[in-house]
Amino acid sequence: MNANQRLKPSHQGGGGGGSCADSPEPGILNERVLLLVFESIQWDLRVLCLVSSVNRKLRAIAKRLLWRELCAYRAPRMVATLTAGGARIGGGWPAVAKLMFFCCGAEPSRNFRMGQQLPGHFASTSRFSKTSGRSFLPRRCRGDVLYVSDPCEHEMKKAGHQDDLGVYRGVFKEFSGSRTRACLIGRRVGLEDRACPYCGARVWSMTTARLVPRSAARRLGSRNGRLEYFVCVNGHLHGTCWLAPLSSEEEEEDDGGGGGGGEFEDDYDDDEDGGDDDKEGGRSGQDAVNEGDDRAATDGSTSSTGEEIIGEWGPAE
Figure 1 (cartoon, rainbow, N blue to C red):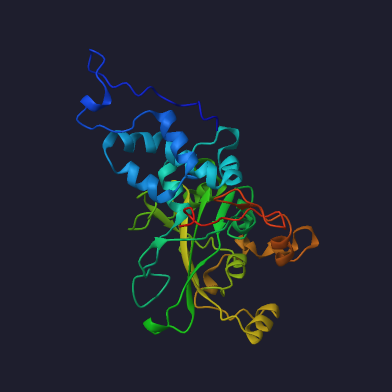
Figure 2: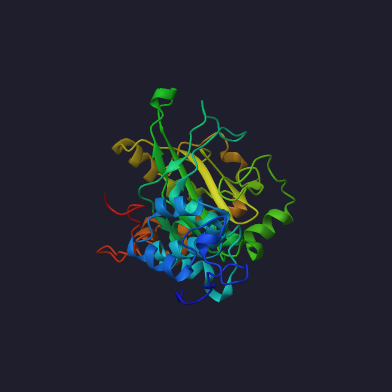
């Protein structure tokens, strides 16, 4: 985005040419200066959080301009895709920024049992992939654009669980016009009695809607029926899964198609099964991961394979 766009003068009302110092809420309100300052510190997330909490004027500037610029700096390809063709960002840029950098934790649901609630936390490193997102879309919704993160892994042995817990999140492009939303409404799926952790809107359970393709479990390194995810009315996705142990026996079992069943496997709609991802172009699902994986980055850096990598969420100390 052009840094000169959407900038407003810093002069605040009050005739006589009063300065910011005369305002009951003094501070740096020149937006061009703010942009230059944040560019010089590489859009440090912690500093932006502090600045946006100083007063209502800075909070308004951050909501209208700074959060978007942070997202564009840290994940340029992802933002370019989400806004292509003038697409609107559901829930606003603060929610997208929070989704990029914050693991929302987890709590039990009717389709996913766990012993205790897991608090959220800032994620030092995350990767969002459009290729991964396709694994979460039922066959009839393949035209939608969805970015999904790799699962944030949490050890749960102290809570009495044998497997680790994975927490993942994602965002749809222009969810209001998506096939996924149309499918949810067409099936008359009711909204859950819980809120999106990123924008506060109501959510649908994709498990309850029977719209979870088997390819989602494979992508996460889980098993069918051992995951749950929600999508809010603004198109933000968040979910949890039990991660299969990384052993040679488990890998052979998964490769053999055994998959371990799962208590909700029979609830999946075979007509909506995303497992056909493996048949696209005659390639396996893992081949699709290795080729053309479009990943978003916080720092715009590129690995040797051409993937954009999300780096640390603040400059090195």
